[in-house]
Length: 402
Image (cartoon, rainbow, N blue to C red; front, side):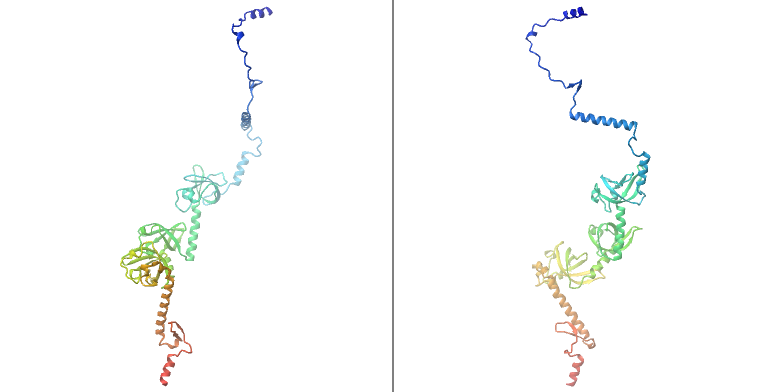
């Protein structure tokens, strides 16, 4: 063996001529190899640990899925069934909105069934986005179950159905109280207009509209209304503008001052809206001075104070005047602001004159009825006959004695 090793050593090549001048090799950096493996960084060690945990959990799920579980799958199904809620059609259920889409919202109802609120069931009004009805993630609300999708057993919910029930109940209450409500006209046909009241669509026949306006003219306007018929079963909600106007007109007294808005101008006068009632301010009642062109004094949309001159309730006509409110003849043309400032004061004077005229008329009727016990004062006010005031009989007796 030794001779073989020596023979092999003798075969070694001689060193190169330049080997003696080669620089010594630079010391190598210590390798990251420790015992034949790389040393892992902190992040790598954490990933490796998580991988091992995952592998172990995966293996347990494959070989012993129920290890460490206190109940069986049958127990879980039984627990779900015992806590399940009533999902019959028409039932009310409380839920929490957890996601909204362009078509509606998904609702958590604490059940194994999925629940969805469609856009057209979110409220009574027509909306384009679910958020317009105040539906947002996190909203807790009571819903009504109205249907079930047979494909995936998703429950269809509704807020509109609940709101409708409340709205019909409210309308029945308002009808019983005979109160006046406000409705916005949203449509119409040859027979009348459709108005929105308490979120419900009601019909107002043209025979129950106080003005002669068309459906197009009334569109988007708000009308005072009263309930004529409230029938939830038949879905009939009939309203009347005439009845509501009759109540409002009953409060209009001759000589009272009201605030109005000029609606339109005609050659013979201006139509004034006084709280839903159309009154005519005749050109002759605008000012004591002659008004050649109404548009020089009034314009549509102007707000002004007017006095009630007359009121024909049967025909629904109201005559108005600003002429009676002028402190000085012609003020309505020259200084309308002064007229409106002095309106209440001038109306009070007008009412006093009317009262005196009526009292004098009644006194004339009582002149030949001394048994009434009334007399007319120097101010034109009727009052009880005093002992100091000679009666007609005593006056006649005195003249006879003379």
